[in-house]
Length: 182
Image 1 (cartoon, rainbow, N blue to C red):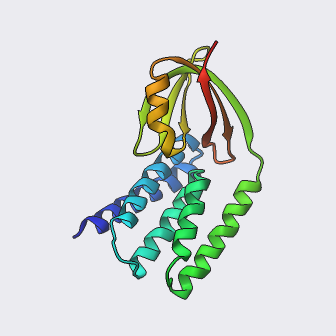
Image 2 (image 1 turned 120 degrees about the vertical axis):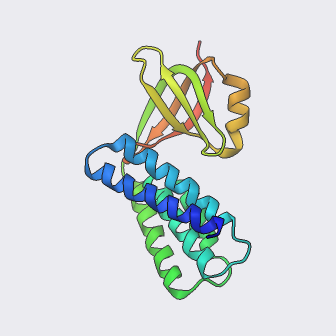
């Protein structure tokens, strides 16, 4: 069994667990599991050098998982990547359906959130940080642009920061702005 197959199979296990958690009403667990599934599926897709049917299937699957965990920019990039080259007709159809799903998800109401807390965790691989709210002690997982994760850690690690972000209908929180709190 090659590494791509192992990554894909594990991603699908996480996706199944995420769906089960979602059906049980456990939104946080569902999002976390979809994040793990997305990360593994994306890694599987990027582990294949040539653009063959398997690559297109993995890219389409990663795009779908990205939508499920609220990573709309990643989903958009993967959908565009999946359209490149010469994808099979069934993949083009599925990518177009995902594009429609993504458009609808982006149109749904998102709420703005503002958190003042301490940056306690960072994961460059998943482009996530965690803040512990100063007042409530609640921990928030926030998706950040992957190209900014290193700078955020260098500038704000263990500091009290103010985060402005968008919280989507899936519950995923995506960073808009981070500054040191006054």
